[in-house]
Length: 456
Image (cartoon, rainbow, N blue to C red; front, side, top):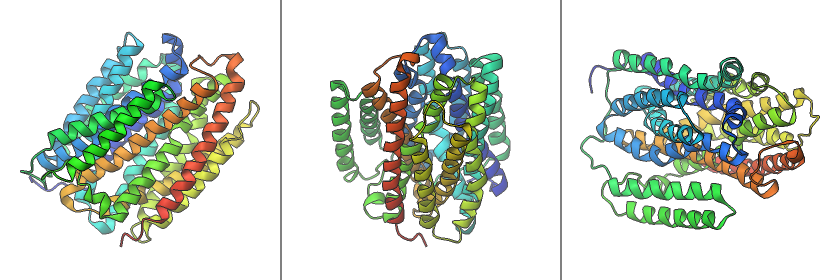
């Protein structure tokens, strides 16, 4: 196990890691119009720049969480940071849209190696009575990344071009590697000696990719075939995992642990209903309102700022109050914000958009860290990596589904075209439909969150 690591060192390292990925994603959102212009991309193809990262992360989060439980969470975590740093540099050098999308997929692999495992490391270090506070601070780091991303990303894109966003992540990655090597020397391997389920991991990854990629291809025939195949593959995976001696994902965690199952379901619904908001609003502010990336980033920063402010308080409160109460209230606030965004027009005042984003930020800040606390407090230490990976998979899968819903609505309403003035009316109809669908999804999430039961 090595020399025990201090809780402060673990919190610093994990929080910086949790800052990196959302900072990259949110800063890139405001740069998408500039990337689309340089490579002449349609809105649907442009969406693959964030989706490639999410898809690669989703397929590997659970297998890598299990691998980390077996061979060491610190080791896998360090590999992830190194790969993230390398792929960031390669993204900055991208000569084409295809190469950029491929390197974004590699960034997704690195996120699977570090993002969920950082939660497992914090859960390993902090005692239950302080866990909510630590997870709240870690969530705040995520939201600070989301907050700074649009603002700094807008400035950098306007001043130095979108490639500067990727270059900025290289020194941050090097700093992270240095901190892990010098400040976090403890290793955690509660499942040392267990067999890694390679067949189950492959079946899980292929099935999940088929499902998620197929969803993005709907309503086409290929999309329907892939979705059907993905669902069938996941059903086969569940059957296989229930019979194997050392499963990559213990299905009993869902069948016999109500808190774990419904907390993960709530996370999936929440991210499915919220992730595409920034993507959609960045396009709205650029194409409909004519704002520069810097101006759009200044508006979009409101939501993650409110998340960062609320999350530590919500996490600390969840150490004393049942997490489901705080998380469910947060989901209700999110519903109100999504309903407000469903009424956007070409002349909607900026204060109205900012107020709606503020509601979303408050709601999400109230939901995230208490929900994470509920998940991690409901399982044994030997499966912390799997639990964190499962929760992160719900997040990533939900994010991909969210983008998929938005792109499906675009495809049905305006087609696979660039957003030029003649398509603005159809684009606004797509926005209204998307936000209404997201509000309905999040309403379902309120009830699944309330139904999870007591953690303590």
